[in-house]
Image (cartoon, rainbow, N blue to C red; front, top):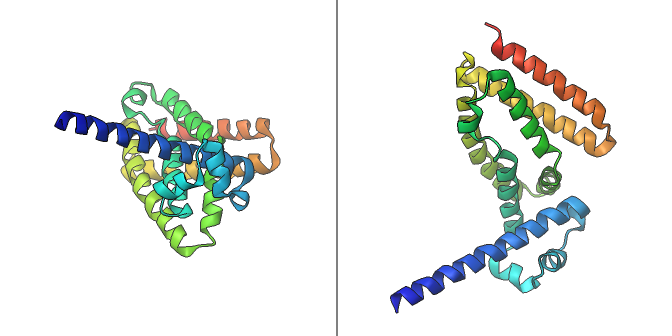
Length: 205
């Protein structure tokens, strides 16, 4: 009997997680397509194939749903950094892979949805603080992985992390430029130039 109850609880938990995932996925898709200003919970429920009551059951507020969406987006944008695989590559190839993977994330619909949530957060100090706290924890985890990926470059921890910060700043700027003005070829050229600069810095003794 206990096993049956345990199995039922597991299935219930699986259904709960599946429903939450559907709602988060629908939110990200609609943020990219419509923007935060036009996003409604009715639209999210419809896109997920659920009722608005499902949102109210699984999330105590629309902000809670957006917070889960931020966590999911941040995870997707950073999931490419598989240190065990990257450290097997020669340093120049490693740099190419890391920059390309980061750029793939920044030009995706996930980053566009992230921008929409961040802009909305600017209008709500409490929500903005919650977003910042969540992202800070994720950033600390990624910084550790980044340091491991480039530990054999001969550069110190602060230098390695400063280059990560520079990469993020540049790619965020290029992503916003591309969203507003397009110009894929120009952006690709700038990314290649950054790769060359990054390689020169990390490989020269």
